[in-house]
Image (tube, rainbow, N blue to C red; front, top):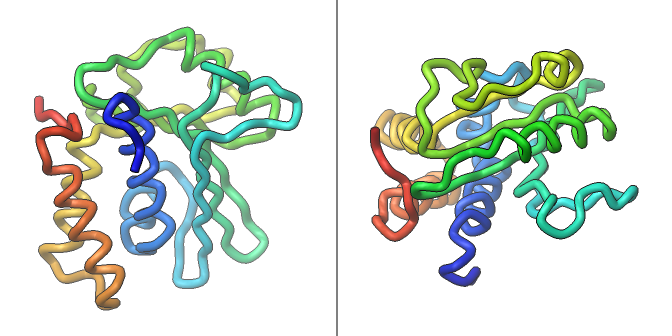
Length: 183
């Protein structure tokens, strides 16, 4: 229901909704960033997050927040999404790393059409000082789509509702108007 001019918000919202509704998808995506995800893990997701101290207002608002809880362990990450030809911005990423550190958030995850060989190899160089206490990860939309397709093709989702949600997410990301581009 988000306007066509807000494609990034639409993509972030769909990604976060599927991550919270389909545990196997959350596991496939987020375990490569460090947290352990098991059968009792809760993945909570939020879009367009604001912080009490007001440090993320206006244009400086992360696209999302992922909160993964398992037993007594908790892991959280801010999410910044770019779609179509939009490139990640070094200044914005550095501000979000500072925001994550100030709010005791473990990581910043970026998703875009830019390629990275590993999630730890970020396509945008940032100050190493900012990644001492907050991890920085990147995954491409093609990798997200591939993970979803692998789960679907291997019939890894036994719950019919979750399988339907994943199929619709694949259909969404595969549509030309969404802005997921190959390399």
